[in-house]
Length: 183
Image (cartoon, rainbow, N blue to C red; front, top):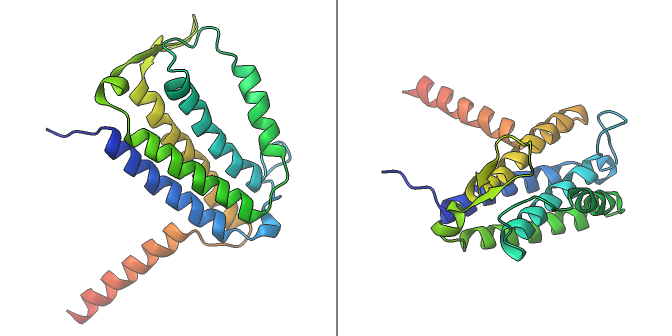
């Protein structure tokens, strides 16, 4: 039987955040204001956005441990999060926020019990599905970050940086090709 619980969830998130941090380090600071299109977040805003998402899940599943999102003030939360994204920060400050936030969130995730992860949270009337387990909602943080990391990797290409995962893959292929040639 395969088991994927809090410990695995936390480790998986740590891997995702580690890769996001590498990208954040590799994008030059002068490109943190870069926007792929006028109406989208800048690189710096996107990185802060990723830290905001963990705060939402910690609030719902930790601080308040809500069992329903009926009445949760998403517009107010989003307004605060978007204001936080717009605050000017240096590259070092954005990276430190991602690092400390990621460590805190992964530690919190790793502390959750199977019973807590199995609990369901109901959504406001009309939403589909009508509820999700805490596990699925918390897993969504990782999925959300991977979605935005894909955007960051494309932005890396747009500003002249080859993403580290691409470089690593090319190095593995070259090593396998070299090994096969000498065998």
